[in-house]
Length: 384
Ligand SMILES: *Cc1c(COP(=O)(O)O)cnc(C)c1O
Image (cartoon, rainbow, N blue to C red; front, side, top):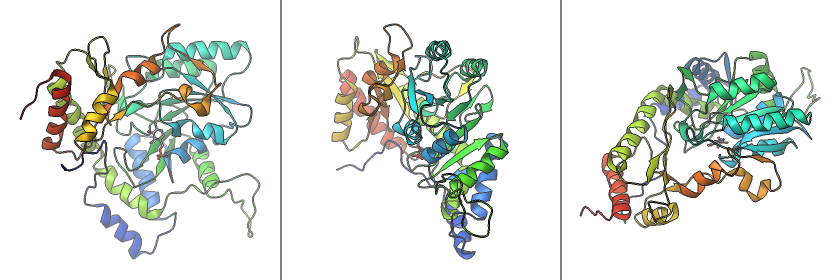
């Protein structure tokens, strides 16, 4: 069997051990310490945000952001539909109700048109959402100008789920810095990793202080253990923050490598009629976390699943695009605003979309194997 090619696997820089060793040498194995402080400062500097708070996962960061905005029982939160479940689960943790917003075709992200429809209706019935959760899918920024203008006009705070888009930028501003809060993830499959972890960033340092309080069991200032509000155990470990510090140093290299992977796919497969790669918005610079494309069923008979199965036979991992959340059994009955009257864009992206192996550590030879196989199935060309 040929060696396995992963969709996106951890890619260490070689310097992680230096920081881990420091944590061990000073016996800071706790969920606080110099690496956590350093990692927070370095992320804030990189993103050009006022502050950052390191947590145990991206999901935890979203949970804290929603909590800090006062989301609770009976509130509604607008949320991109085309995303991983982690974006929306914390809405349920807080007993609030998600309202899902469709994507548009140029960005694959939240449609400003659908968002406006939803905001107008919510305002009419006097039930504006407590927050809008905007996802930057597969490393591409959403149309932040249009979306922020709308949210500002209605006075609704934005949380940017930038779990997949760390290192990307939109009109020269780093992904994750557009809303009240931005969220990054350092899960093992993301562009950089701490093996597991997340970051909440904001220009509001008071709210970030509050997030540290909530993330450490919400302990009041007293000599004994006293608690007045519900807290969580969400702080990042000092050992893992060490991995993150070394990883952050190579983030821009990782972005370049992922973009090069994308370019090679386009060069090799771009001519195939009916293959449509995820576009890149003008004035934006994605990290191309995953190379994703659509198969036009008018021109290509194969479905994404046919290709996923064919690649799996050769020990290559490919995946469908996220199944939209408004179609998940968990969210049955939740409201959904589509991009067009009879045009459910996220559903179409799901039905036709395919994610290809895109790791920054994938070799040219490995990518060649993926390309050869795709060509063979899509146009019947088989080189050897
Ligand atoms: C990975 C991911 C998350 C969650 O991050 P974790 O660190 O795994 O909790 C949230 N949103 C999106 C879009 C993601 O891809």
